[in-house]
Length: 133
Image 1: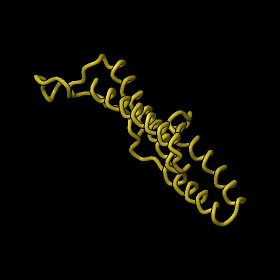
Image 2: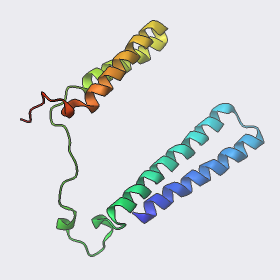
Image 3: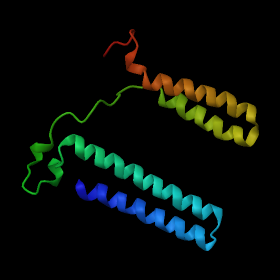
Image 4: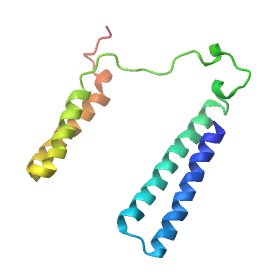
């Protein structure tokens, strides 16, 4: 796991240096933006992997050369088995994209629906009326 976060931090530094060089050489704005965003994305992934490594104790069962399959057993997290919220999120995101073509009024309505859908998706299992099946 240590190798993975170092790899992504290295990529972030590499893309940052390339962005600065490309900017000084007189590159186009799209290329500068793309390389800058690539540096940010690599840094974001590197930070997540570093933080996860620190929180999990440094060595994952997958990194242990003498580890057994059973070493990785256990809870991996909670995954919703029957949520309908991704559907309104997808529809409102699609409407927001179409609103950029059709008109700003549709984008504003769709963004409102998207915010409501995201809040519903995030707080789905926190409502007092929820009962586990």
